[in-house]
Image (cartoon, rainbow, N blue to C red; front, side, top):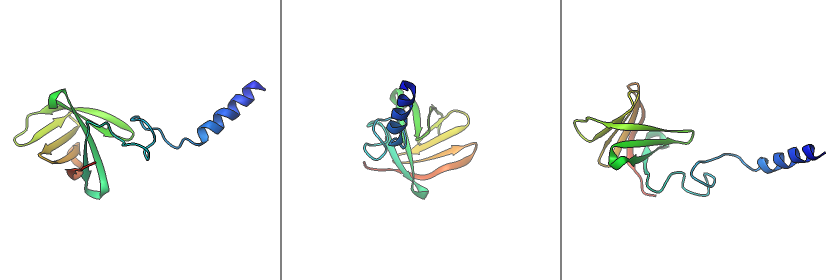
Length: 113
């Protein structure tokens, strides 16, 4: 009886949960990124969220389902961050993201919040 009641309570409580977001609240209630992250608006109405860490020596790329770190590497112009597979290129207020030489996000420009 107690076990059945607990299952019913948990099912009802979780019915209102549609998704989980690691930055607090639901996606519609609060910003989806930390306050010190940079938001870029890209082609195709896509967003790129990057948090520069270690004084700009690394970049955390944040997607709804995962985050990953890219370390700064030599660049002729602007900045370049890579993990050997994925590369983020930035110059002033623009960025683009590549994976294995294929562009994932293009023409990204910093956006105001």
